[in-house]
Structure formats: C-alpha cells, structure tokens
Image (cartoon, rainbow, N blue to C red; front, side, top):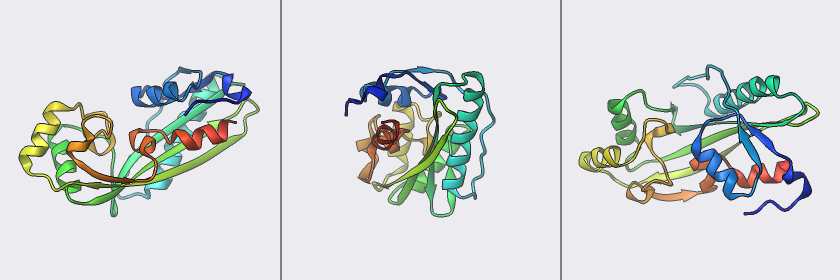
Length: 191
C-alpha cells in the first residue's frame, strides 16, 4: 500500500525503535525518522489489553512530542491477549517457551494501540485487534522456533513475519497489526 496524498509527504516522527514498525512504514511509502520514546511502559498481565496499549502508545507519543513540538509523532504499543492474560515481551527464554506453550492450539488477540499527535497538538488515539489461531505445537516445535527466531523483543514471543507459518494456523484481520502496526488504519488517519 503506497501513500499518495500530499500530506503523506511530510515526515513523521516514529516514537519507537521497533525495526518491524520501521519496515511497515517504509513499505507503505511513509517518510519518517526514528526517535525512540524514553518511558516506562505499563505492564499489567491481568489488565485490559486495549487500555494498556492505548496508554503506552500515548505515553510514548507524548514524550517524543515534547522533544519535537510541531511535528507529527506516532507512538504505538502491541500486546497479545489470551483470554484474561496479557502477554508482553518475554523476560527470558523460559518465559518465551511458557508463552508459546500457552498459545499452542489456541486463538488469541493481538492488540496494537496507536497515538498520533499532529502538528497542532491534536491527538488521535485508537487501537486495532486481530485474531490469531496457533497450530497445535509439540515442545520440540516450540524449542526449535525459539532457537531459529529471535523472540525476546516480541509480544507473545513470536513473529508472524519470521517463520510464522510454522506456528500460526490463521489470521483474522490486519496482518500488519500482528507485526506491530496497523498500517492501513494509520494511513487513513494520516491523510
């Protein structure tokens, strides 16, 4: 999806060091520069996933906007929700294994919150949810996946774009959302 509108030619400030978010914006033809937010994200394994991602996205965008006033700033945050449990990034390989074991054979939701702060300071905060169903996985499958894919910086300990077919059976909704940014929705709001 290419950005066509004149307003899309303005450079935005991405308040994230995520290489996946950068890749998605680059592929969409959005001009941007990276200025990671310096904030402590809310991390609540029993919290409301929509509230968590919206809060963290706004926190990131506000911190960066404070440094780059008058520019368009995009903050984002992604979590995986399995029932009442919110899965962020794993703290170690054991936690990554535990997360993937709990997702095996299950359907979960990936929530990404986005906060756009426009040049005039107006905020647009929204979130997108995508349903993802995992294949049944043996312990050996999980160990192999963790060995082959860098999972430590990924919500839920997996990456759809990195050998996702090994573990994911189906995706209902935005694939880019699962990767870390609902690009289609962001583009609509930037126009």
